[in-house]
Image (tube, rainbow, N blue to C red; front, side, top):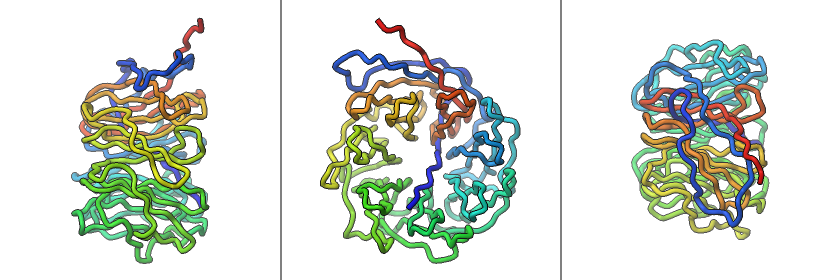
Length: 393
């Protein structure tokens, strides 16, 4: 089965230097790693609005990374496509379509099997949730719909849930607790989602992370509770259902988790979970051999409210690092030394607006990962990674 990773979310203003460095957990010896800074930046737009997310991929087939900005949230706005030139610049920008809607995620995958990246846009009620087909050159037309307009959908994720080779959609819905559900919408192989979507996890959430957590070959779904309840991992099975009888708890019983992400942070080949909770901060939960999860290890408290989360190897050391965006504060990279217990934190960006998402990729093709950030009430921006070499003693 496949998981289709598309990267989403946001940060600060032009050419901002690194603001601070600090150790989250002091290492027993001085690390000699070279950590990139993100002080050089490019504004993606000139005006701030209510951007909700950002995704990156080659949308026009020229071999260079492009950017999709999804906008609106509770206020309808037209989504935007930004075509990259391979040098870190934007050669062309245009509207995705003509519809102003309340978008939260633009998921990228080849939904209709023609070899080009299409776009799934998750919209809040009362807007339709739309699939845009790509002609291969970055021109998009509405090809289908999924789910129901009345669902309070926030973000979506993409994975091949039923193993038929086509990307399916997992919808995170934030409705009233006890009266909502999240859904899986299956692709018929042609980019159509006309079958009834499958309900699971009857509680409010804003993101769902797909991964094979127990290494059994089936996609599992990590579903963080958004509004004061217990979070669970729903394990997959041969029948492609996600039963309440096959779920594993993680985190506190009163979680208000905005985003959860998956990676092996301690190098034991067992997937771990990192979360951001606006009342509890940033926490890491290690996967155990008995398919349970450890108590949370705090990487940062809630004094600076976290609001966006991404996981990527930012210094090319084959270890998963953590990127956290905040409300009215600089963003932070937690560089992982591979143990999951020692992190070097580096802040970047300004304190404008709220960071809603990140997309990580090598936009200027220099071999160093860059961070694109989407913000609400702050200008969307692309930060370029630069290695700051340290002289060894």
